[in-house]
Length: 350
Image (cartoon, rainbow, N blue to C red):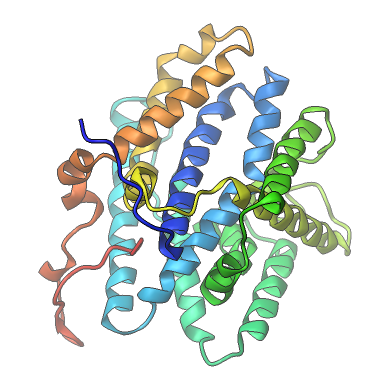
């Protein structure tokens, strides 16, 4: 078997490497969630992951959106995201109805199923960015932060069309789009990187000692202030504090990310498959009752290891070949009077 070859240090390689590491965190976080109320170690690892993984994932998505925000490619990406959302929202609903026999099950495209909130929000992030391209980047960022803070005050269900998460994580999408390349260029290896990596691990230890005494809802970004139990007029200040925590934790985690092009980079090009397919595996694991047999915290590293194995497997080229018609549907088959026949589809991760 040929060993993977390290080629060169490349800016996009860094983001692809980061993206795969984050999708492993996504899978690990979802796999750990069923046991966080039983084991303090699982809860600590879960909270640590959520202090950085979704903000950074949105940041990376914003960075790659630079290549396909406007023009025909931008419209194609929006259409593909919409198709992915409709398809997988339907598939997950069918699975709940036929396999899990979920009571009172009904299909609704206004309440994203579990991880599909990201597709709904990604669609909206792109639209909002397109509407503000004439603004200076700093004004766009200030506007995004203002929306993220103010959205928590609105008296609506935060889950509806991923309303809350769309605005809460919007600043990270804007930062990725406008400043992702600049931030990457300022990252340096050496003693500074080693210190940052050590501090990232220390943050996990601090959380494990009970240092982060907050509701996970603040990190999930899916709830309004009222839903989190805060009716104070100054509740938005808490959101700013969470932003500071996420930015700090995310910046420290970047020290763990390699810059060189390698096998990790190749896996990072297919994280969309891991993202959309792993929900089926997690739901099946919960349904199977396997978590009922986990009686000690020694299962935590086992769960994380399995999450890594699943991520590598789902990012394999064979999986892409098998599921590409479903995950990257050929939107050139669809006709639109306004633009005519679309020439070809574009992946929303490229």
